Amino acid sequence: MKLTDREWKPIPITNLFDRFEPGKGKGLNHLEQVEFGIPYIGATNRNNGVLCFVKNTSSSKKIIQKGNCIGFIKNGDGSAGYAIYRQEPFISTSDVIYGYSTWINMFTGLFFVAAQDLIQSKYSHGYKRNSEHLKGDRVMLPVTQSGEPDYYFMEEYAKELIENKKAQYRAYVEKMIESIDETLSFSLKKWHSFIISDIFEIKPGKRLVAANSTEGERPFIGALDNNNGVARFVSDDNVSKDKNVLGVNYNGNGMVIGFYHPYECIFSDDVKRFHLKHYPDNEYVLLFMKALILKQKSKFGYLYKFNAERMAHTSIMMPVDAEGNPDYAFMEQYGKMLVARKYKQYLDYLDSQKIK
Image (cartoon, rainbow, N blue to C red; front, side, top):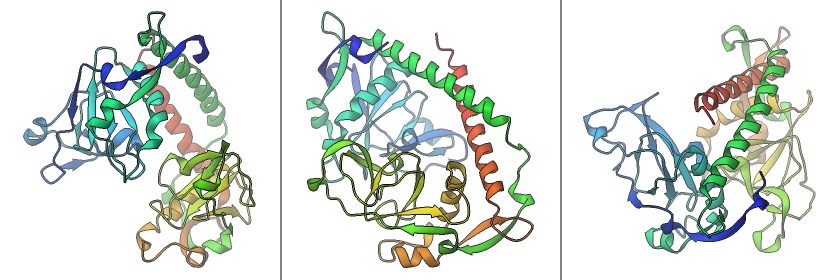
């Protein structure tokens, strides 16, 4: 199936839903957070809106909302205007409005969210999405010959994408499992402290304001804490162009947070580019290092930024080999093991959905 197989037209969002209701949660003061429980949803498009999990008690039961709905995020840094699909019952802050209708299932819901998020860019922390905005918003959707939303096409297209992705992940996991050691453990390793500048070559980004950039297909990496750091897509080119690199934020909401970029992209001056000095850059080692660097986040803030000098002199704990050197081979294998496990969990979940 191809998206071009159907005619598309803008549909008013309010025409698509039978009813809307706001999140009923009033904060976490009277709720008990637990490792596993009822999802507590807030104003973020990360982790499908989940901020934490809370215990199912008499207090929480009064504000639990039904799942199988679309949540429209009204507020939040970088999240205003996004939508999320919620399958299971949940508790939510009032920063999200939920739309319910009989056409919604996992597949049509995910398709709609992807289509809806194309209009997100007009919202920001300073321009919140309220109920009146929602009434005026339109989303481009495939339609039938009679001009009605083609929910059948949306569902079948989403199913096809998921099945294709499952096949890719399954082949990836099977290949990876052949080369990893499932017995790897942190507890069996010694750890030593190292200065970041002894481990990485740190290179700067370059300032590129939105008004001076041109829309294109190259990712522009900003100091974000979501979307893998991608702020927008541009056709611009400059000396910060890089790939197979760890970008680490020294400023902004995502300070100290890093993202791995296997693709060619250019970087904001709020982001530094990290390349390993003594080991070939690769996805698994750089993701492992991202987690080690992130352990330092609590030291830095708006008045004490993670600038180039502080980056260079910050110490991080790393696993070491028998000679006391950073054990990059262990980090690579451990990273592969975690990725394989996560893909396996994803596949198990998709298999449990019984796609037909």
